Length: 186
Image 1: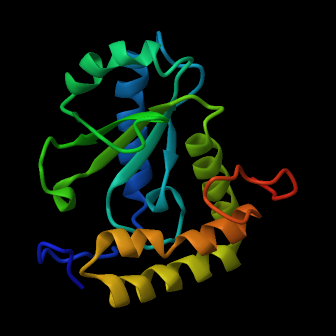
Image 2: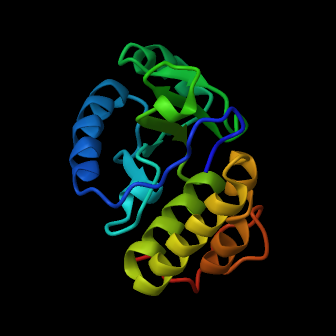
């Protein structure tokens, strides 16, 4: 499978070292972000789900007191080798590492967002649901492989076509809704 620019898109088998890489990055991030944080940096995305194949990019979210106050954190995060990018700017400050224009060379992604944001609530709930249910993990991995096969040349379509499954797991109709209270998160 290939992305729009012809670069292969691959899912790697789960690697327990992803948790180690996250733990190391978490220490560095929490040290420089401590004055903005209201909780620990969280490992999200497929690399945070034991046993799940994933694109080998460590996705993280850091809960900040205020998105507007966290503008000042951009300088300290970029000093750690991250590049400030754009992804859901109304909800988060987004960064990736290394500072490359090629998404497939990225090894880390970070969102600074308020823990009340829809982004935070949906990503944490989805992660926790997959960690807690083997059937969700299995279905999600099969879906990701099928979508990569069908949309490998279109990364946006690959991501967009996971929405129905994510919404099902979260107990909602669409991506604009927070997870339902009845959906177990742990």
